[in-house]
Image (tube, rainbow, N blue to C red):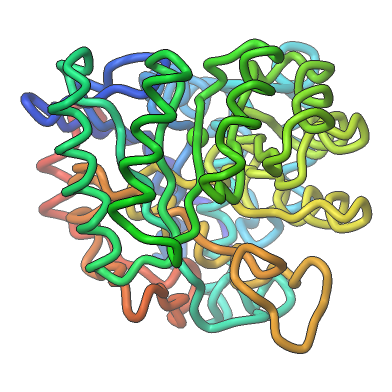
Length: 390
Ligand code: CA
């Protein structure tokens, strides 16, 4: 079997009045880069690369750098191909766009490798530890008019209650755009709305310096926050280590980290309790397997980050199925030693309407697809509707 064609898709949906803020910026649109790899036997594999940045640079990298090297190659050798592409781009790649392009291709090649033998990717990766995974809702962002605190608190109460009614056991809340005092007020309001049973997680999107992050961590202790995601900028490993040592909340990070080399640095320098590689960013399934081996050696739990289209969610589910409990127990508990999946709840038609399948929450859990490859099918009409440039 040989790769016959590789085609890039840039997908975009403007959010209009559904625009929302993290600590870093407004999100005026949802976008994704997808790659479609077709073989001479007619199999089609899909992959996704990058997260929320403009998809065009990833498309250019696939189209101009990597695709010409892959045409005519055997797609069922993704590990070998990963090493080749990394070595080709090492001198100017290593992190960022080149690795995001490799991620998309790696996911698509594993999709094909599974389809070629009629097995899901989780089987190709060595077997699954679970057939469904507990999900956490990602929500409670900031609205466009984030300065009116009383109105903001009322809206949060309603939004957070909706997640408990939907059956979520965990909720991730954005922090870092407002003062520590106002963000604590938001968290208190949410805690009161959802009650003590819900596991609350927070994500600062690297809004703080170490001193503010440590102060925030201490202020959050009474609210039973289960992890503190991206407290400080990803490059500042010393700040990460300081925050981890001096604040009581477990520290999570890694969605902007790349390959085994990047995660080796994050983990050996004692930065995180929970590593969050994103399949579409870190280098796909091939890199994830290496990162998991490394993390488990150091007792660091892996909970993949996922915020992309349905293809990224499908890839995350396949990968999460294969993560061993960290550490092993006879009764793994979600988040404590059992992985959970990020289930973004903000408006994103690329996640909800792109595939013929839908990922549904049942008793707080999402099933792992069982079909060959990624186990999902792209809805061609939806793809055409969302594609702005091919
Ligand atoms: Ca995040």
